[in-house]
Image 1 (cartoon, rainbow, N blue to C red):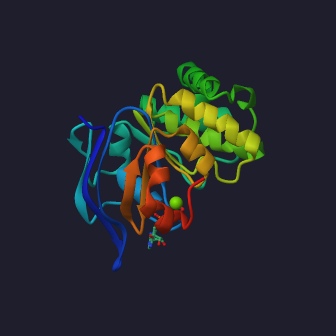
Image 2 (cartoon, rainbow, N blue to C red):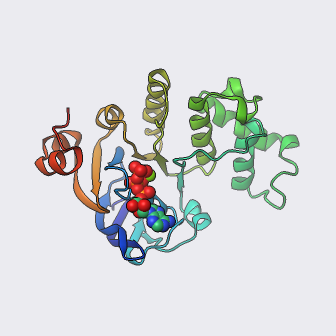
Length: 248
Ligand SMILES: Nc1ncnc2c1ncn2[C@@H]1O[C@H](COP(=O)(O)OP(=O)(O)OP(=O)(O)O)[C@@H](O)[C@H]1O
Ligand SMILES: [Mg+2]
């Protein structure tokens, strides 16, 4: 069974189709990247998969269950979590506290999200273990506002992981990062992909072609091509329509 089975998905803003009749099967294994020029509909596609937007028509099945039109909290419950193109953190809280809020939510202690987690050992231990997994434990007690941009991206990813997802969607995890930070996140994504499905939207072609098992090319909201990195590189339509020149 496919992980995602997507049929004729359409999302319009007014008369403009940001997602234009997208159908595809996404398999359980491997890292999938979604590429395409600015405005191609990549983030809109993520928003549809995670319930931030409801499609106008079409269906999304995840592990055989119809999740079309479900709300974000219901979709997280099915095991799909995401990071955002623009990182969303509680700036005045520490790194550990940011992750603890997510852990507390996952554990169901959400009557008052800010109440007791600092004194709850299960929450703090779980959050700390997660920070160790993403190699951010040394910054646990730093305010989120004070850490470098690369660490913020990783913290955002750690917050998304508090849902213990089977699928993690990353919207431009490399945006604005230095070469060293990009290498660090690449290694982390590879490591995490051994225990969950990772789907990445990214403009960094070194990352995309270096890390992906499959690539989807979106163009004007529609799928222009889907295949292995080699197949995408060799695809003439991709070269002319998306890149305007040969993929290196
Ligand atoms: N809420 C909205 N209302 C109206 N138009 C929107 C809305 N969200 C997206 N769009 C439009 O839909 C198109 C696709 O946007 P989307 O953000 O999905 O592109 P993208 O591929 O993620 O681009 P980028 O690489 O710049 O992040 C764009 O033309 C955008 O202006
Ligand atoms: Mg986007």
